[in-house]
Image (cartoon, rainbow, N blue to C red; front, side, top):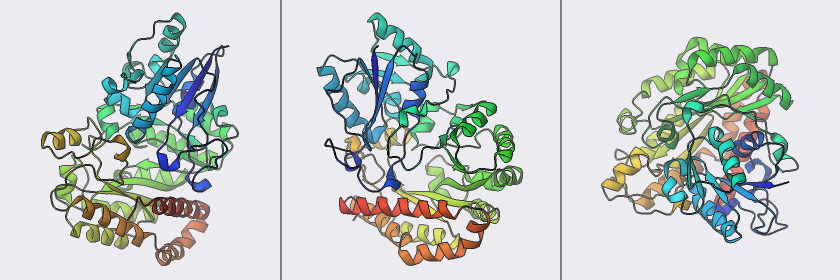
Length: 440
């Protein structure tokens, strides 16, 4: 029986580098991807397969395998290429897919067989070509033939993850933010999974909390309404990525709350309309942000807001303005990052044309490093400013204040443990990053 080895590379600071090592950080940092189990589900029974996730597994290059499949993003691309080169030395064919190879397939195929676009439509063809000994250098996943598969979660067995009840109900995004690799990869295409299949998958997980991993769960509002209605009888709690527009749609928001939504991740990105327009995120408006946040909170839904820094309109004052917005609107959690021009996105191409890209080391395309020349501050000022408000937000007294403020709602909606888990995860990540001196 031939064996396929699926591999998820990870960044150096989280990687298990030696056999017998314990995973870095705490349990709360360990979350899986659905990419490998999805391909495993599409793999015929004639194959044996194994899965190495470098955040919880040590990768032994001498492990027996007939075919290797690596899934990576930009910040893990260098490691993916390193892995691919090692297996190629052993005459084992290597498939490289994911967001980064989708947009940079010429680069990827110098290290292995590249897949651009979704792998699901071409996985059968890849395996057939492998069997016949005529693998191509490049496969293009055709979006017109895209279909969802229910992940084979047996692949997660005995792995020390914090949480595995993750479900995908859609893929893609209808918006065109110029910094976003999803927008560039899908070019406005948006796919939805059959709702009955979603419900069956949730029932099979036997979990009272589900994390939907969609980029925007309301990308198709009518599909979202039907999904939320179907979730109500399950009596689960759930969270997902969405846009602030969900908070302005009374029907959608009401259904989301009734179906068990207790938290959302919203990409606000900036607190300036001018900056939002510069990011091609013109559908965002600061005045509407405030109204949406208030509506989410009235329904007992926590908000983790994403904010990125480094646009041409940002200056030293932007950090305090952003923190003020976060505090005034009582945002429950944050993701704070340096604007990262992911390769082949419109933002990357613009900055490259202006000769402002200063670093092409993909390891640093992680939202923590600045890889371009900002207009109104230095790179050091940008990273320091972001780190400063990150520390302010996660000060213990502020966490306690938010907990006490939200406590009645958290108890009423049965989401106190989710709130606590979020902060434990965030503090664990911050502690590990500080220990590695990646945050000043």
